[in-house]
Image 1 (cartoon, rainbow, N blue to C red):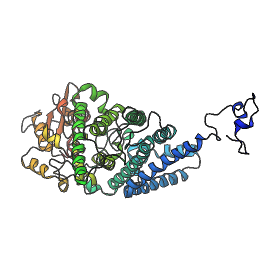
Image 2: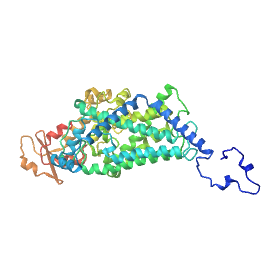
Image 3: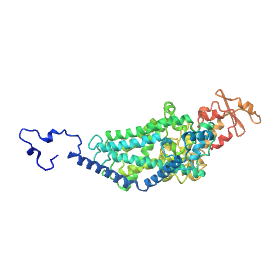
Image 4: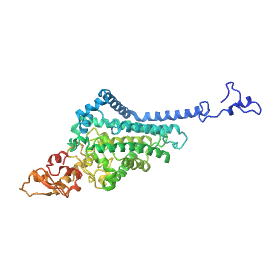
Length: 501
């Protein structure tokens, strides 16, 4: 830098002497360095452009999501402020009341719940910390490895969009769970009594399942951030920018539809493999199906590798095969968030906005289809497809779901299936009828005799006054072996009717 007098340093130095400028060690980013203002200005300009672009696209959906988030945060702060005077008193009060996990979650549904990822503050900090790290990496690395191609997004904008999607995810989840609590008439399943009442939650998971899920949630968040960063490094043009290619309205609509069907195709086979491949079912995908009658909170609660593979098979492959422009890219992302949360919401009604938008598509499916899929186990090999149900129809796994019980949500194709007698309920009735009757007509069996047959060697159940030997049928039961094992040796009529057989 020049002396205050403005004289040239070279002229000021005596012949043969060392310039004062060269005597001072030069800092890499000195506040006096002439490169610093330009670097700071470029960085600030980049952040301003990204924020301006983000703000113009979010519109009312993000505003609504932020409102729901603020309401949830306010409620949790209120709950924290009004807790017991000391942690010891709070623990003592809870121990005295001894509410079950089921009862605690039932009470939580009376307000906006699901704010935190799995209810864990640690995981929420990891989620937002990972997004902040992506933004910081973009700010600190202008012109480096993560420099986007012309017309594409940089890490700062991608990170900001990830923050917006997290907010929207939490807000829409809270809306769906609030709707579930306030509209029992639209629920796809009646509340079920759980055998492990003290250690079972609203969606049928045991306490040990929830503890294992907490780690998977954490790894999912980390893998999500790493995958996004890797995509930027490997292919800087993956995320389309506002200055890139812009399609016309008609082309956007066609591309969005084909993009959704591409996602559905890759996800269909990945999902189906998770059911029919023993290793993947027992070690990966089965974790997601611990929720037998789900709420929207369990949408992304799966094995971390399951979530990561879905990220690759879904949006990543589809963007390579059917590229979208900037606006349509994020419209697709937000629609997918809505669709995924809705099909796990336990509701099937007019409040499922994303599903009702696609009802005009052939073979379209509603949340009640996926709900029935979750009720079963490995052998509930139907309704795998997302976004329309085309691939389920094409490959023979399209069922009518619970259309006969939520008739206002039955699609045209559901009604045709019911009329032809091929609905899932009819198939389950036929499967039950195939079980071997233990006694002939007119004979009777006592409850004492029935109770003797509950071991793996011989399992009998009573349904509607009849007694059936289900020993050989266990592995074929769409709801899984455990369901029949729990009711073996007793009367299962109530449970059989509760789940809508």
